[in-house]
Length: 381
Image (cartoon, rainbow, N blue to C red; front, top):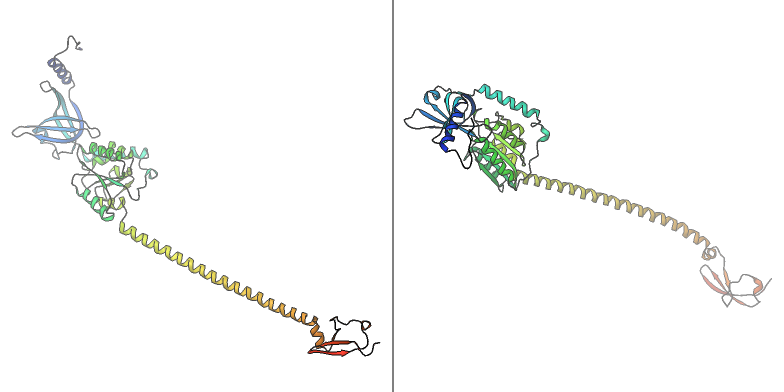
């Protein structure tokens, strides 16, 4: 029956609490699956308080269990363990709090975990999240590297130390978070969001050391997988050992076998790059030297060809000149004089061509091949 209230006639807290308790008490027993985030035991008491966290959302419930319920759990109940709890909801009116009174706790077996992983693997495969064509290339030299790892972990040191050995100037934006247990997924997802919002972060590394299948479960969580898929920056994963392949490795842009391998992939090696530059400079120098040598040889051959061409022309010109000289010599008056002829000129310098132009006793100059002499006209025909 609904409780009728109004601003003029509000219900007191005790009434609302009683009604809530009555309603929750009618729910009966319920099976709940979650991950143990925290176990608290007060000295001298046979009751344990367990925080049971949702594996995909940042939600939790308080579970109360007697020691005889917890002691029969095998393997022993521990933080980070996935369990199924059968219990009855209880509402404590005095504190206004809700809790589950556990009657049975069962660990989620490895077989069930592996079956769930295979279900998720098939789901992501069908969505094309593992496709090679959706993998993005890494920046050659990132302005800043985002790094998500455990607090003060060996994986964090491996990435930062080895990356700085390769490229001393590399900058990191580090988020140290829980990397196993019930709080890991929301913490890693939040760190991803922060790093993607950072304007200088060009690539993000998610790294943690090895562990059991249960320890690595957060890295196969659907919420985390979809956060990685939606990441603005390319993602490098280095989770566990080389044989460990959580689902996040399959959707990451690059999967590194170890945190040290991630350091090698995220930045270039300055020594290797300098050696590569040196080799390229030497290669360019050799190419230029060969080109210059080849061009010089081409110039030398061209000069030699030009010199031979000019020499041929000179030789041809010399021969032509000899022929022309011979022709000119044959046509010149001197050649005629050499054959015994003479040229007669009047005192006025006119060449005598017709005897009719002469008068008896007229002096004439006679020119022969080797000189001149004077003659006098004595008789005319």
